[in-house]
Length: 150
Image 1 (cartoon, rainbow, N blue to C red):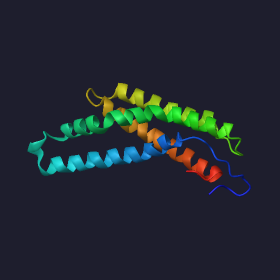
Image 2 (image 1 turned 30 degrees about the vertical axis):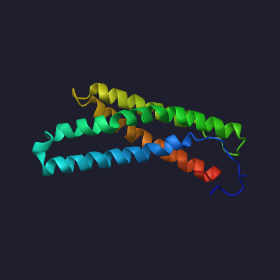
Image 3 (image 1 turned 120 degrees about the horizontal axis):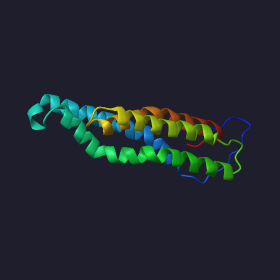
């Protein structure tokens, strides 16, 4: 619900859906990876070991997660622009959120470049999401408190 004293304004933006998908997709990926790892540990001869588990998880969900990670700064910018054009009482500090999201992606790229050969995609995904999930959750909570949606 919106804070008291703020007027109810309808914001014509669905960009926040992408932000809401970020922590959900990352949690799903972690659970899926854990499940595949468990399955391989029960029957290791069927897949080829723990390295193959990460290859499977990266192949199945890695590409969509990378796309989603790259969309976070765009979604923040577009959603904040829609809020500003709706003349709401609250306008998110776009620079702060964009800076945090871009910093998270930058750290992910640096970590991937410094990672052991073969583990770069995994390192990129984990670092990107560890940095971006808090940003998206904070943004969505602030948006909810001030606008009532999501």
